[in-house]
Structures are given as C-alpha cells and as structure tokens.
Image (cartoon, rainbow, N blue to C red):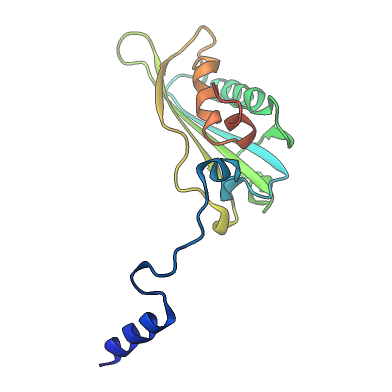
Length: 166
C-alpha cells in the first residue's frame, strides 16, 4: 500500500514517466566542460612505475616520467612536475596526479611496452573511473614508447591537450 502511495505522490508531482525532463546539455556545451577529475587543479604531478626485469629499470622509469612531464607541459595551464613514491604532493586536493604505468616485455622479438595512463585525484568526489586507453608500443632507441604514443594517451586525460588532440 505504501509503494502505491509513493507512486501516486510521484505522479502528482509531475516526475513520473518522464514528465520532468532533465536539462538538456548540447554536445558542444558538454565538450567544453572539464571532467570532474580536472576541475580546480593548480598543478599536475606525474608518478611513474615501470615493471621490467632489466637492471636499469629505475633509470628507464625516470626517463619515462621525464618524457611524460615534457609532453604534458606543452600548452599546460598549470605547472607540471614529476614526483616520487611517497611524495605528499599527490595527496593535495588541488593536484591532478597522472599515473603512468608501463610493463616491458622482452621475451620474444623487439622489446615492447604496455602503457597505461590515468588521472588520480585524492579528493574522492573528483576521481576518474577510467584513464587513457592502454596501448602496446615497440620501444624506440631510448628504450621508451615513441612520443606520439604517450602524447595520444595524455590527449585523453589532460584538458589542455584534449582541445588540440590530433
């Protein structure tokens, strides 16, 4: 009986069966709105993790982080820096973390990198569920994914890069 009364109250209020439509946001308007994960950021902090059995894993990790910082900083509207594990900057409410995770496969043929890039906000109300589409790329002479591959991933999560994505 109470369920029926609740439905009656909803119907009387005009909210039943689509009577009250949500505000319409056009595609052009939606495209100009920044994602919650990047609203209110004052800085970008890039944190990298490379999984590799090579003895120069940490050097490769540092090179990948610098590559991501350099590409992210192009046309950036906020400062972009690399950070290390345990850096409290990642927990600042106005920091957008960019987590760059790479796994190196050297088992057969030319070495390849599986690359995943995603945004991170310590403020749970501004978190992102997904990041850039993961990608596999052959390593270049520097032992990194080509700049274009990392740039494409960053284009998917950084608002100043989205506007000019190739």
